[in-house]
Structure formats: structure tokens, C-alpha cells
Length: 85
Length: 391
Picture 1 (cartoon, chains in turn green, brown):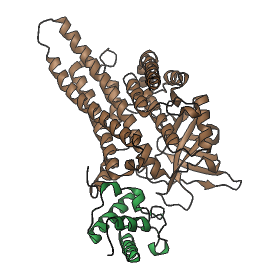
Picture 2 (picture 1 turned 45 degrees about the vertical axis):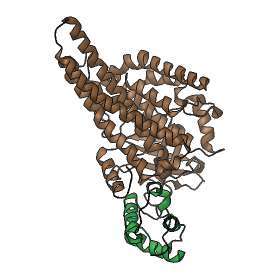
Picture 3 (picture 1 turned 180 degrees about the vertical axis):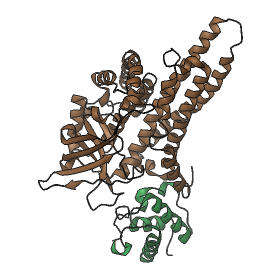
């Protein structure tokens, strides 16, 4: 189950994160910002995640560190009781 | 507790004395000649005001941000340029203090700063980034002998020629993405500044902020451990906006005070007769009250988040929007107050050589909307507003 959340996150990051590299070449704990995701792109990732998982990230989750890695994003989604895409 | 309050009071008494006795009498010349306010900065060093935010364990004064913000306000009432130099220095000190690693190179540096009252300037903007502080082109570049170097094209470095040391944002390494930034503290003897432009601006003339090519060779441990995006969110952006807003409030308050003096003088000349300017003054007071309320509430909110040791709260989008909004609101409201005050005083406010002159105040506060351009901040906010919930 956890894996499928991560896979769905990766798909969204690939589409909206505008990384300088292929997200599939990055481990789950690699910094997406270091891989070229801008603040602007991260907002689009957040919007796409909210849409795909039908959740709303509360304000305390809306910070850079929560969206830094695929693992962190998947953890945040699990904290919102998301089980799979 | 009372000793802390006493120290704050004594510190601010000293700042007020410097503002009244040294910054004020030199303010017109500093402005006219676009020269560095060297007398006032020397007096601030003598009072050890440059290490106000350094903890007492490192020999500093250990004062809080509320006291330093009040100092920026007091200096702003007498000389905007002096206040801006002081505020910008404190932003760099706050960055070092709040992101300090125990036993680091920067800990020893802060001891030296206390002992020698070293003045720090910042090199955050860069030619080619379109004003985006969150991206760098210049990079920390390893040299053969174990040192590292950088070369950065800075469109403006405030008081660069008068600073002892520089805090510079750079890409982490030659291969790093533009957003993967670090902050580096370099000492004067490690840096070469090549001036690339002139300095003849409309206001804040005493900050002496032309462009430079900055070249430095330094040790790798001079790179701050905390990533710059964390430093920016938790310290540099909110502290900049808070301290700038306080000094803009100081400038606007003096403009209002001058207008009030003008109205009183007019009332005294013709006792019993209506004073039309007094009604205009009342309008200006409303504008000033709005500015003061915004500045004070933002400071309270920042200190509250900090006191709760909840610094991560400062990294949320809601906090970014809050302090971005302070910047936009204060930078638009301060010149509005000054222009209103000039309207009260009329021609004697417009002239540069009367006790009621408002020209310098107006020109100095007009720089506020450009220091990190408001339109860029609106662009950032526009993105954040798409996703932030409770703003």
C-alpha cells in the first residue's frame, strides 16, 4: 500500500515538479529541491496531490520540508489517512 | 527579569542619544552627499550596538529582536540611511545567531564581531536572476589547495565599501541547481570588491549601494550548515521585513511629527482662528496609525512563534504570506504618510532647508517598495494563495 502511494506521488512529481532529472532516478529520500523543483513548481505539485488524493493539506503541513522528498510527501498523505491512489 | 528590562532600557536610551546627537545633525549631509553615515555607525560601534543580538555566552549583549526593532525605529526617526545600515547588519547577525552550530567557525566569528564590532553587509541579489533571491548563479567552487572561491555579479551591495565582512548567497557547488543555495560568511581580507556602477539614487542615499563584482577565497567551514531556504524562511525574510518596517515607521513618524509641529506653530500664530492644516494632520494620523498597527502586530506574531520554540511555524506558507504582506503594506503606507505630512506643511515641507522639510523622508521611504520589489512578492503570494488555507 505504502509503495503505491509513493508511486502515485512520483507520477505527480514527474508531471508537475519540473525537475532537472528523471524522478525515477532519485531515491525516495532525495531532495526534490536539490533536483531542481522550484517553489512555484512545488505549489503545482501540492495542488495536483490535493486533486489526485482528494485531500486538503492543512496550513501546518504547507511548508518546504514536507514536500522536500517523495518519502516526506507520502508520509504527509498517510498522516491524512490516504491509503492509495 | 528586571535586569533584562533594565538592559533593554539602557540600550535604547543610548540608541536615542546617538540618533538625536549624531545621526540627526548629519542626516542632511549624508543625504545630500550620498555618503556613508560614518559618525553614527562609529557611535553605534562604541555602544557595542552591532553585537546587540549576539548571546551573552559569546560576549554579546544578548538583547532580543523587539529591542533591536525599537532601535531601528528610533534611528529611522533621525536618519533613514543610518537606520537601514543598522537594520541590514542586524539581519545578518540574526542569521548567524539563529542558525549557529555549536563549535563552528561562525561561533568564533561572532566572538570576534563582539570584540571588534565588525559590520556585516549582504550580497543576496545577483545579476541574471530577475530579482529572485531564492536562486543563485554564482557557486561555491573548490580550488586546488583545499580552499573554496566564488565570483558573484551583485547589482547592489549596500554599504559594501564600508563593511568589514560579507554574507553571500551562492549555489552549494558548481553542479548544484540554482535553488540549492547556501549562505557564506567571508571576512574583509578574503574578499575583493570591484565596483561596477555608480550610486546617485533618489533616496536612502547614505546606504552607498552600488553594484560590485565580488570575488572571495575562503575556507569550506565558512559555509553555514543550514540550507539557505531554511535560513530565508525562518530568519532572513521575516527579520528583514520586520526591521525594515520598523525603520520605515520611524521615518514616517518623524514626518508626522514635523507636520504636527507645523500645525502647532500655525495655531500659535493666530490663536482662536481655525487651522485647516490641523484637519489634514488628522487624516495623516489615521494613515500613520494603520502603519503602526501593522508593524507592531507582525512583530508580536513573529515573537510569539519564536517564543513557543515553534520555529517550524515560520516555514509555513501562512507565515510567508504574513510577513510578505507586512513588507508590502508597510512599504506602501510609509511614503503615503510622508506625502500626507508634506501636504500638511505645504511649501515649507517641500523645501529642503526648513525645520518642516519632508523631502528626505518621502524619498527614503520611496525605496521601500523596491527593496525586494513588491511586484515580485505579489507574484510569490499569488502562488502561495493557490494552496494556503488560513490566511
